Image 1 (tube, helix red, strand yellow):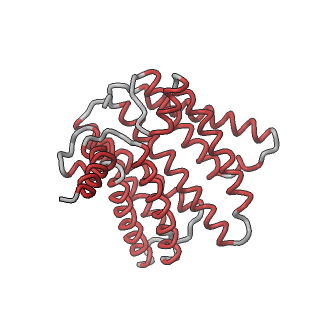
Image 2 (cartoon, rainbow, N blue to C red):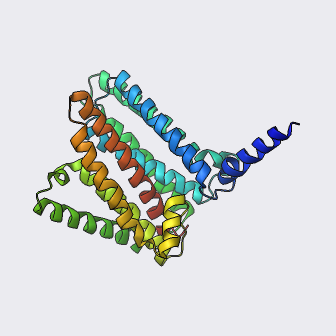
Image 3 (cartoon, helix red, strand yellow):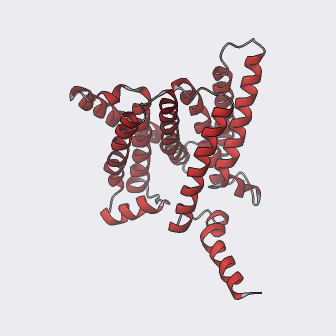
Length: 283
């Protein structure tokens, strides 16, 4: 075999396959690759929703939340060892994202079909309920195979993230910064502060470790996962401001603005939910 082929196969195995097979986390190479794939998928999903005439508004974003919870809890089921190889590889990043996406699309189409029968006035209601049912099934599965060993974790993470988000709302609102009055903007702040809270409690208190490259580097550099709080705020507060001030030209821009906010919420709420459920079950 050509030596170049051997090197290519070795590279692919080292940076892409082994992290999936061993669930060992992320490296610089696969992080950049998954980020590129995510960007492509985001544009593809935006095009698909437009083609299907799906109105991307606040209600649609909130109807997606149950599917975020379902996908996160499904990942914890894999963490719990319920699935065996090779099936387990389907539920490890990035494969699980495609699986959850396909199920979500199926539920979206089914919900629109139900609404077309005129028995339901708004297809987003059965859509959200389908996601909620999926999430409940996942939680029941987890409770069958695992015990809740740290019930305080859920309260601690949600309380910390909510108190900090509330403090930011009060401070910015008092200062006359109006973007905090947008529900989706506060959802972005809250979800990412939940993620930061779960990382802080998991790493600094419970002894877990961070798998993502940049956060892991900053935690090692500072010696504490508290760095996640200023990191999240330093990134997403300016991002929210830019989105709200630049995507205002027309209805298409506003639609794109809502879609981008949805993606940002998913990026924060998904790991926050997974971390919280996993730690509560002692996995």
